[in-house]
Image 1 (cartoon, rainbow, N blue to C red):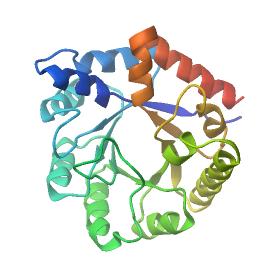
Image 2 (cartoon, helix red, strand yellow):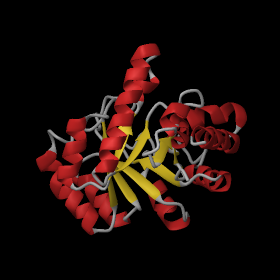
Image 3 (cartoon, rainbow, N blue to C red):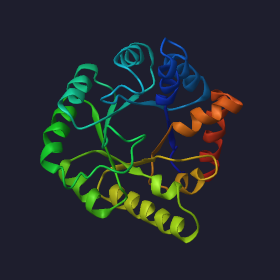
Amino acid sequence: MTPHLRLGVNIDHVATIRNARGGDHPDPWRAVQVVEAAGGDGITVHLREDRRHIRDGDLDTLMANTTLPINLEMAATEEMLAIALRHKPHAACIVPEKREERTTEGGLDAAGLHNQLAPMVTRLTDAGIRVSLFIEPDARQIDAAIQLRAPVVELHTGRYAHCEGEERATELRRIADAAALAARNGIEPHAGHGLTFDNVGPIAAIPQIAELNIGHFLIGEAIFIGLDASIREMRARMDAARG
């Protein structure tokens, strides 16, 4: 039997809309309640250095009120490490972060940043937080994750999502190969970035991938069909791809 493919819903862009005007509306906590009702398996949030998405108070509310596992995306900084250790989310996904970028532009260079990441991975793991590394689907980065003893990698699907034809087919093979390599070495592969109703199927069909984290598209689609319907449709397409 094919394992259940989990759907983590990133609610950052509910907060982005709120922050555009200030105040408290729309409230990310309401989005969490919709995710729970629609069958989402987890909540992903990225607490950025500039707090352009969720704010510290949002994380407080989520940690205190939802039973869904929280996946905290975080830069490899002492500030974010301290926040993660204080809140102890289910998982912490270490991502690259540049102040000027609109969204995460690529995977973490886990190989090049080994000495910086190693003590963070150890401290998070010792605190009972499941560490994930957001990386490119590349054997060198998988090897770095093995050396760092990270239990999870999240494979960046942005390049796959934004190319077409043979280039997309090549990128899909890279993702599938990376997922298989990770799984053979005892690392659980996840995937995310740029996934939509139209392109999620081939990624969801990769048998080793255990979880997809999707946010921007679901929140954008919710403007037209509602968040509950958006999540349920994504869930249906993921399930169909898994057969």
